[in-house]
Length: 288
Image (tube, rainbow, N blue to C red; front, top):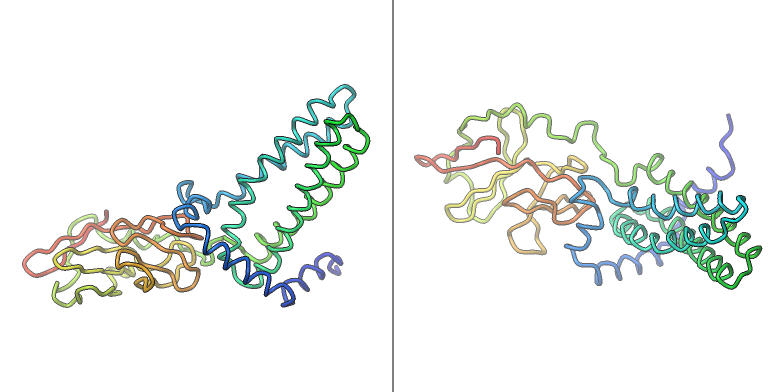
């Protein structure tokens, strides 16, 4: 079966660089104004998965419900209220989406910025619809609402393309859930000589087939799973911050080196952490 025109159109967006300057400018602004702690919340790290898919339920649900009520006599006030709720709910949904978008790959960002623009247009239409309804102009308010719903639907198609065709903000490896960590004994196991791990350096190693990273700071030792919880790529010591974080060079996720907690997305799952102690000149570890 031949692909629909819209599919070919979106593929064209993926491969054109006409929006790249705008994308670079937007990324620059986001990097300057959004702290890592806020990004962590917007990515959904406390939830264990991206927050954006949950956040969009409020505006989408409110606007679809308002469209239904527009065809029910006597429900003008309820429809207007739902449209207002949708406009307000679009703010946190947009914030979460923008945070996720800023860390996507370039082809994904090209589709994402059009998705973003469509959503801005939809919010503008629904805001105008709300104002018209407040003025008693129900007919024009309903037309603006239907136009907004059409634009939201087009935006939703682009969002689906991002998630399911391009794999935006989904785990990239078949088994990035550290299943091999379970093979590491819960008892204390010798990892290696303490002096073989250089002070102030991140050292990759393996234990029972599980990739680990070891960070030594004086007599303190931190041991984490050695691969990113988002894309399963090997981790490295962050070079643009203090020495308390490790970073994924592929997707930019950053983790606390002592606890494994997510400090910056797109990762939302913490790194498995291992308890470590120094005994008779050897580093001993066990599952934390």
